[in-house]
Image (cartoon, rainbow, N blue to C red):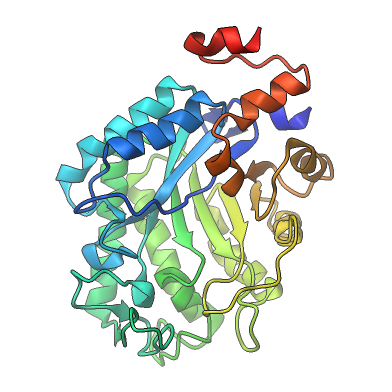
Amino acid sequence: MVFFEPFRVQEMTLRNRLVMPPMCMYSAHDGLASDFHVVHYGARAMGGVGLIIIEATGVLPNGRISDHCLGLWKDEQIEPLRRVVDACHRGGAKVAIQLAHAGRKCVASSVAHVVAPSQIRFSDAHEYRDPEPLTHLEIETIVEAFRSAAIRAAAAGVDAIEVHAAHGYLINQFLSPLTNRRSDDFGGSQEHRVRFLAWVLRAIRQEWPSPKPLILRVSATDYADGGITLREMMGIVGRIQKNINLLHVSSGGLLPVMPPQAPGFQVPYAAALRRETNLPVIAVGLITSVEQAEEILCQGQADLIAMGRELLRNPSMALESARRMHIALTPPRQYERAYL
């Protein structure tokens, strides 16, 4: 089965095509990884996942979604993260970390200064606030924060970095005409709206060794008139793809509305971007079985498959699926008796 075959991107070789996507656990204090994170991610590594992408990690305190999100804005956060990475490596998985800035979707009560490209509130819900439009100096500061976080991620031993440009967070806010009403060099045309993302990727690439993968997560559509469409996203990715190695394709999140959902509902977006850009892609979104994943891979719609909720329910789903299908997969030595 293709699902259980290795996959190589840059210098990183994965033991199979299963990815654990970033899912916020809201279990950190002052951005520090805890014992929970060691157990949570380590269990999925021992369960057979090929690539674990650690949850959205704020590059600044006001880049967090909540007070309890991970962070990499100071050196004290490196060593706790290293414990998580080491646990995953011992379990046989490769590790990426998603670097993020929440922008207007920050609801951390400890943050006084919520920012965005333009002064447009996410929703009328009480936890959200009116953001302050970013100045040029503040934009440059955030770009440097992404750079510094990448350096810290390298020090923690991660194998890849994922830049979060999806789900309505700050980079997505710059990309979409619905949330970017600026009239300067960061707003208006597609070229200008992509500039912030381009600066972030360039800053990370200056610190992140080229043999190591740089992943970009995007929302292929905003599901709203006047917003990003699949065709628009193709143009956006085309402008920056020389700086990335792998594309993680999701959708929505810019507005407080739920997109129509069905099994594998985002796979066509991944397939289209794969064809258009020739980049390898991760497909994600209500993919719940190895059989479903295998069909997607065999049809050439994606190169890797992310399963979120399924891995929350069953950390060892890769090992269990391999056993059920009589496919050789090496379990942790301590668990071998369960797979004889």
